[in-house]
Amino acid sequence: MSRRVLDGETEVTSIPERRPEVTQEAAGAKAPEPEKSGGVRVWRCKVCGYLCARPGPPEVCPICKVPAERFEPFEFP
Ligand SMILES: [Zn+2]
Image (cartoon, rainbow, N blue to C red; front, top):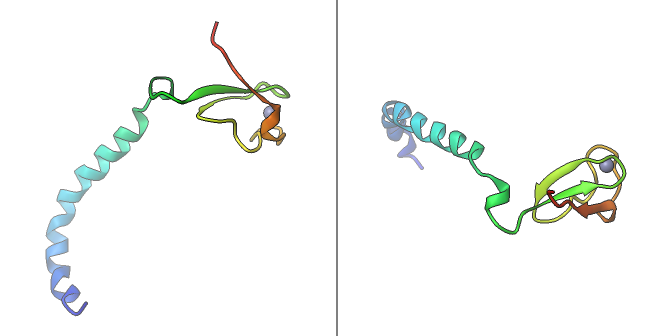
């Protein structure tokens, strides 16, 4: 761990190289389309009509707080 003091100097030079990686990850996070990834479907809250795309219904609706059993699979027309 005492080497960390020496590594500190190297770390300063490597920061510019790390930034592009972070940017790529952030850009990739926006890309995924749930409908095409398989296993993910759209769930609809029967109480408030809230829609979400995920493998299973959420534990509770973020809008009206009803439990998962109030969700039904939503089929696109
Ligand atoms: Zn709801």
